[in-house]
Length: 201
Image (cartoon, rainbow, N blue to C red; front, side):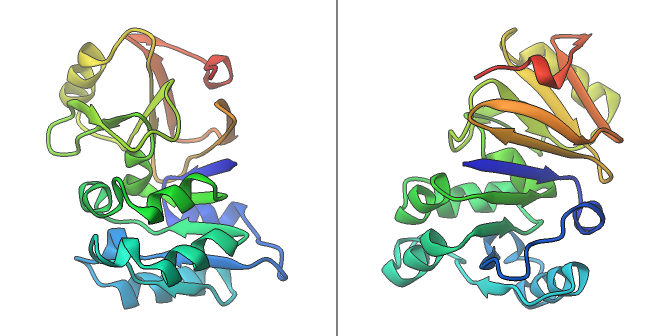
């Protein structure tokens, strides 16, 4: 299943026009602390179409059979912007995560960073355990030069660090990566620049 990672809702809205007949839902877990209703309304306005919002604020709801079934039958699931750490704590080792693993995903901002095997902790830039959707890439959002240098120094040499800024969009399918909107995307292995297209499964 493919994953689209957009640095912001504005970038996604300028690039992605879902098929009007597609069944698109929004998973609002990451926005719990900032307000799910507001995040849902912003998404609907940006895409110019109705998108059903699904609430999963805690681990109990992430095991709910009805919610899991709804995610499983959607054509695409949008993971709204918000806290990657909160999303990881809610989704990890749940039926909802199993459904997300089989879904076409569109992930916005920081929440996308939780999806890989390696996640970059937003609190200090250290690699930690993510949710395992892919292995060769660690995603992160822009940070200070010092923090990014620390992250690169701590990553395994085989892992590419992909920094997706607010204007950037990247895409992954079966472990293969491509640039959808190259602006605001930086790819490195260690301290050296790298090509995203060269990152394999």
